[in-house]
Length: 510
Ligand SMILES: Nc1ncnc2c1ncn2[C@@H]1O[C@H](COP(=O)(O)OP(=O)(O)OP(=O)(O)O)[C@@H](O)[C@H]1O
Image (tube, rainbow, N blue to C red; front, side, top):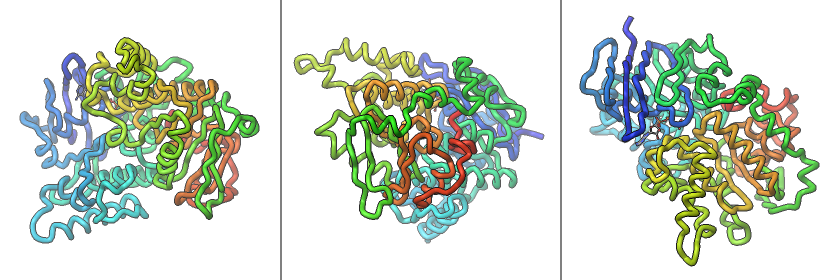
């Protein structure tokens, strides 16, 4: 039987960068392909070719065995191929329902608005029960998580052509663990109905949960394709490359964090550290205040959109005159990147005052700084003077992280900073955070990946803009966090140890 889609020997270069080199992939009916690889491996580029966004330099694309010589986004749409891009593509000034019309141009004519409202509401209800999004809300007012939910729902919505292949490029990167589970459960249901899916993620846990086939890319090449049932984490991490033995072993044990976590002080130790700041919570909060000590890492947890980002933003506003603070923005495309500036300029931005010499920027110093971080966290670019948009999503995220860490800030606020970052880099970043804390820096780290909390000295769980629970590192458990995320103020669940369940996002970094 013909594959639904067949990509044969696809190559694509951006100037000197060979993003794809003779890559082939056959996607069968009802298959869910997990596509994995390090940041800059070429995954998004390959999917952009399949979605008709980029034309390939060479190679063949066939659908149901029919080779297509002229291919475009419109042809892909007509063939039932939909894509949820890593950088969300919704129009912020339009409502949710209006965005559905942008996604599906066939939604027009008399009564289009009511039809759009009904369609998107039904699709959101079907995937994300209890989503709380109104079709008339302006997308600009939604949180990043809600925007990601809307974009996913738009892609699944059928207006005229049935959906046959859905490409999801890191669809859970901004979703909390519960919402991510809703999505993977829904995908499972749709696969049974014959839908084909390509699922890109750096969270191997959810790749194994969701996919029946796995493809691994490395440096623009396809290096492995196999049934998911025949693979394990070690095999994937090894195939992705650049993993030293130590890291592979950690992944296998789902304890990649153990080495650094062992360095994490327990609550008794932190209480010996001087308090850097204390933030009072609104009246009615079960935990009255959040305390941040010097040289400690404080984790913020809970379902997305429960006030964690607002706390970070408010802290920044409140303390920026008194403390040296750096902020790693959560929505990099909207709040973090200067897309037309060079990578070097984006990186050095927070260090300009330190680089100033008699009112001018010391360019040699800036070059040294950016060269050091280029190397240190392996930003994949041939030239740091290229503009920011030439980087893959995960590499852009590394730049934002480097911007904060390379600065003189005593306090670093991080809004889900590992979004889209690959496994190896994450392990390096975890080590870096712990090392910087040991030198006396403080971190407040909101994360949607529960297992990252094991790097934090203390965790605060948020629910409806209040803190329902605070946990020292040794008290952490998936059950307690989930219970508190839904408002329980004393978690009675028996702990199976930190994050033993390895759900979609919990335990998924390895
Ligand atoms: N528009 C562009 N201009 C120049 N280079 C680009 C462009 N888009 C991608 N690249 C380069 O192509 C390579 C592959 O990038 P791609 O976005 O496909 O990686 P990826 O595997 O999706 O990474 P990530 O996991 O970080 O999203 C990278 O080296 C990237 O810098």
